[in-house]
Image (cartoon, rainbow, N blue to C red; front, side, top):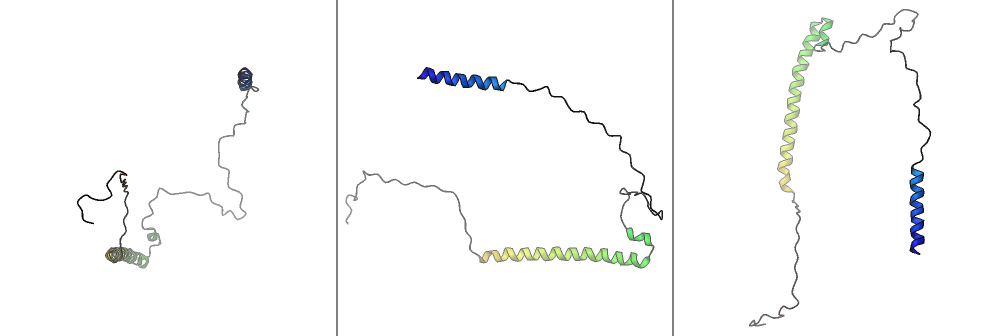
Length: 137
């Protein structure tokens, strides 16, 4: 019985090894036509000729953009807003700080709960005396 089982296992291992060694057809990498170098196309023809190619200027600093209008009233308003924004930001931060302090103070009114890992084991001997000698009971 063991020889038959041994022969079956050997035959199945041999079949697996032979099947694993089969090789498919030789792989040939498909050829793809290389695209021409990228070149921007000319803008489409617009009837009124108002089309203009984009000219990004991201490297230019954006600082005080409103000064291009040469309006002293706008410049004055922007200066007021800049100061007011800083004052508003400081007031907002003071409010959040005060609110956090109130939350810390109110935390004392609530009970606390803590937990920690602990393991204890107690085993009472079966051979211990049931009564303490000399005790009055």
